[in-house]
Amino acid sequence: MNFATFAIPRRVTAFASIVIAGLFHPNVSQAAVLVTYDIAAANAAVDSTLTPTAASGITAGDLSLTGVTPVSISGSFAATGWGVDPTPDLGKYIEFTVTPTTGNQITFGTLDGTFWRAAGNPVATFHAADKFELRSSADSFGSTIGSVADLLHTGDAVQTALSFDLSSLGTRSQGTTFRLYGYNEANPFNAGLGNSVSLDGTGGNLFLNGTVSPVPEPYSIALVTAFGLFGFGLIRRRTPRR
Image (cartoon, rainbow, N blue to C red; front, side, top):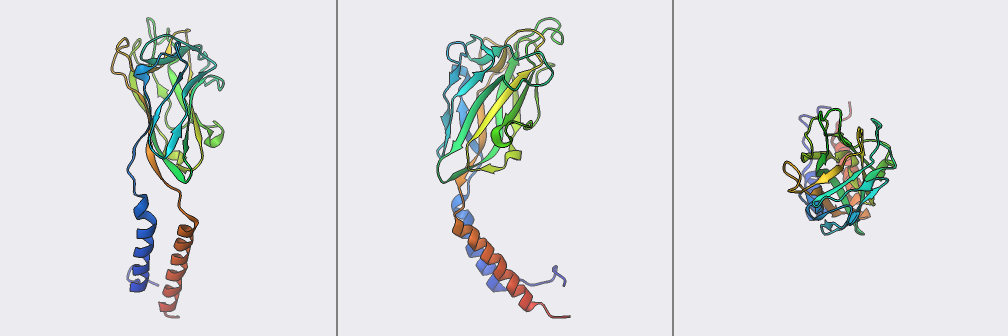
């Protein structure tokens, strides 16, 4: 059968239009900032948690530190004691959780933040943690998400904007916890997130980007299945026997 020249019956195309309009029109949404952590207002030594603002349809937990020592720098969520190993210590991290409200789901886009670390001279020898790696509860924190944030070639206290691609997480209707692991610390200097005029370069807040949409109802899935079977049946009826 030549599918390139096969004419789909009007009944099938009309039915498809109804199904697609009913399924997808109410759920159209654009990627947007879903969660914002105001790093400019942070000082981890004063308060080791930071409350976010969240878009409608989701809730977000506080940003927090575990296993490290918070440092006092206004406009920064940073710490020391990340660990000297060239791989993450899974007991030392920055953490937050996002959860869609009942009936909603999140399609993840990116996590954008500005990182910095203190360094001496030369910076390649004397430096705080210069790598940050993102993992999630989707696979029990077993693998890295996106690329490792690498500050190896940045200067002392230079704020550097970096982004993690979250597309591998797809769409989730349950809560997801994220952890940023700092590591490769040559000296017990400060490292973390920055949005401060007391640091060098341009700072920024921590943003989770993506979309929120309603979870498809069971009847929607049934309609898609019915459409597929209906269309397949019509095609079989129109296909001449050889």
